[in-house]
Length: 630
Image (cartoon, rainbow, N blue to C red; front, side):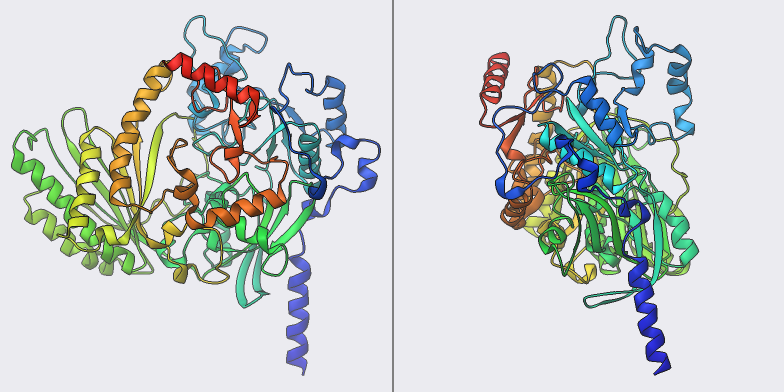
């Protein structure tokens, strides 16, 4: 009896501790709203659909300065003017040569950009309107940087921001760390909710919900991946994160699926939540789990970020401590090993075939393998891979990869290896410093296991040819072997992860490093058409497969199928039920087909008003684009 009573008391303590973080206990009330109707809650049952465009600076609907000031007062001073960081390098009011020099020479040694409220780590989707090294006479403009940012440290502030944006017809964006690669945390004329500082953490040695009973952790949505490794060590457990990077572990990464080096062992990031706290489009703060708000619980686990609400915290599964070892293999042909000799080039590609055959063995042993293959300017083909296995010894991993190394050397390739070591992408070695913006485009594909399961089959040969031709065209290929099936994802299951992930053996990216800055819209479009042509070959050998929502081409054809597969109709129903206003918009998210960003140059950036797709403004923009490209 005493033991039973102790267990009950312990469970009660756990449940009380897990109720909310302190920052979530501070919520918006009717008394807070008072006569400030701009921050009043919404009612989905009487929502009115917008006609035309979201308000933006210079339009009659745009809030007056005194209204922004009143909003800031309700937020207790958390409203920030969205100032592009590189503006200090341009002539004008903000010019500051010392600050500019700091950006030019010192940001690789600190956390300036990761802690900046408006930085976008992929610059071209914002419009690249205020970059760090301006040419003579070049100006800095606001572009797709948000006009205002709410530095959210309480649930109440997020609720106020959501209500104000909805009631005032503003474009709303959500930013955690800014690692989104296609502009989902940027937006012309937008109000941004910045969740970066929601970093609370609580380890739960015993947590029970539904059929789950075991270790768990309650995590703030602003925690970065690298920050979790110290907590894993402290509590002798493992949680899934993006790796040792500054990518937010529990924002868009989880919402979009979230792959990692543990994908073949523990599944996707979206397989980990047991409960989520979220502010919905009506401004309400709710819990979503397997017992309540089950539609949100489904959608927020794999249905894409910036779509269904603003997540403030999650309860996630914690796994036993898991060690990850890596073994590096590399080889190349070219230079001294001349690619003008056909036999040498063919040896390279035979090695490519052998490696992909071996990838089946890697994932069947709960491992992942991350590799890069490229054609350099001096006609050198190079290949480098890290084969990663969990919970094995150095001797085991060495013996595991030896057949692959022997086969590659048997082709006459000059193979270089690195003895087993703690995987560099599973730890906090970077300590979160040095992240800087860049600008590139790429496409992705989730290649089904059947494509690489039978070496010598017509499908295997066709897949290898499609990959080879894309590398020979000058693109950089990045492939990650993984097998995140529903079985390894485990309980609670039934989430919105792209079904293509469940059948995949590889998440493959194709990078186009064409410089985006300063090129004409015509050149930009031509560059993308060439990349898309290469990707079409991948799509042709994997019909009905898909692409990874978080790492994708924003112009992916039939993106609804590619990113969400058969889940899309259900997700769209949830979106329209929960957000009939279309408040949460980001490119290629569920329901985004109802909207168009009208840009002056016709490019797929966020540097233009957000308008209903059926609006006259959108039609005028479409006509203008067609005329310009003719």
